[in-house]
Image 1: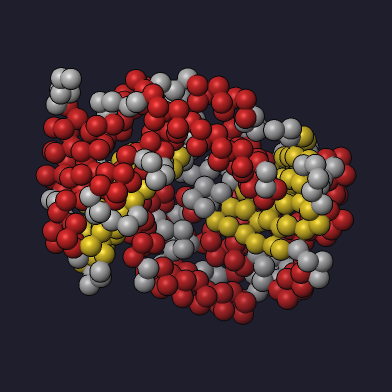
Image 2 (image 1 turned 60 degrees about the vertical axis):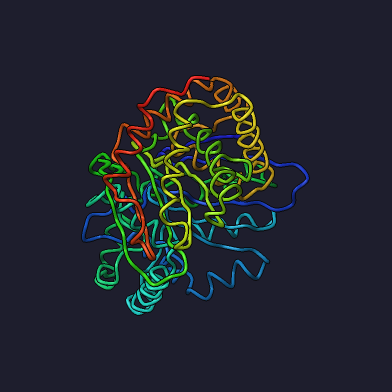
Length: 430
């Protein structure tokens, strides 16, 4: 990955990756702030701020922001996550100055007009309601809330109707002024871009952007775990079972990623084969590993009808136990190939490339070249995988979130004791 990097005197980082045979560019501004930076009373403000960024500046109305970018056939959007917020665009190469100007205008001159704010609050409150009505969405909110109870890391990104309704224009300005600092921001472009030209465009607009050291979040994560079940009259029960995972900077972060692929990363994975193909207990089942700055979440999501409720979790627990005792070299090789292929494919798309560079720069302060990633994958062995599986599945209390006809699911205490006894039991002789 050939990435050119420059830093302005105010601490703002600019990174570009030139891609041949492409006439467009994906660019954006990423900020190291997200829902985790919120206090209890600020729940949802990071997401509301991202929405309001497109609702008018001192120089452009909300319509003009949209019209200016669409007049040249471009696209503009934004996204809030737990630890970052991104504002990004996709345009043809000749329209890079326009896109930078719009994104910079949003960063510097957003008005947060009270009338626009009241309308956007209602939009987000409807979004919150819509999420509640989708069980396979809301179950993940309950999962993270149970894993990190009473912490900003565990709260939903959207906020609640009560907190969202309470925010004022002054609240948005205060949050932005505190957390949007040049030393916590990166401007990235990937595609048909020349680094020096891009640097000049950014420098002319953002070289005087405020810079002050801010704490990313007040408290380190405290994984708790536990049991959440909500009865709803549905055809399927949505189930997420998880454990504390590994943070981005951990030595075994990539090992956890590979373990997730082996367990539930595709149609050949253990969980898919055992739970769906052999037993027909569900239509969809997959595993995931989310890394954060100081912790992580390793989990499995599945949905099953009432006839599979009693069997689903015991079968999953059995597969977790097996993973703690034996991983085949062939499974490791397949998972490595999947990870490497996904990484390579993402590098062929300007938008994916820009997001990848931004994420790596915010996390590691440098891009991770493919050669380094491959070397890290080579260090993973079946023994390291089984050791990590044992650690993940026994070192923390499980987190279970379930929505639907939950009555026949295994008792949480039985779930915990079954998993522990299965993993600590000696392997069967062969």
